[in-house]
Image (cartoon, rainbow, N blue to C red; front, top):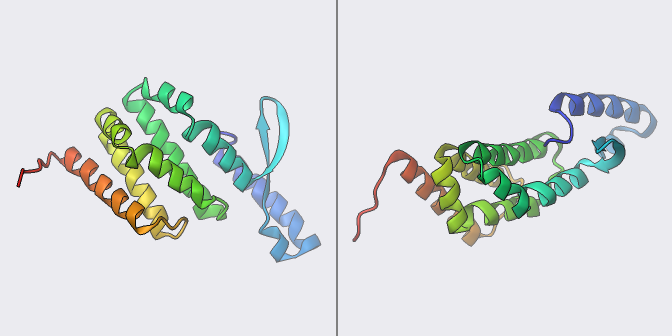
Length: 171
């Protein structure tokens, strides 16, 4: 996410983790704490808290995503980058709550009007976003119910069909 760069996070994580291990043991080192700087004031939050905050205030915030969508192709790419970064947080920390993926799926993929809108603006980023959400499920970062997963696969197929120029024939 945008709070700090990935390099800074890795450095902080390495330093804090190394400092915590001798004093508290390996089990306690799993509770990562990051120092996030917001508007000049230092705040200490867990990674889970920071990801949840940024998800609520950016990725799921209509003011944020509508402003990005005004930029068309690049705006959709930026939204997709946030989804990819969220998955990166899951992969490297395991600290992303499942509700994050559920709400992103509902907002950008299962909402048909939004899905069509982002697919028109940037079909490749729309397809990548949908595929990232499926991948997050396959990696067990979240466990959508069967209906949600089926709808996610169907929506992904529709985006990819449109991207590839596949036309549905009436039966």
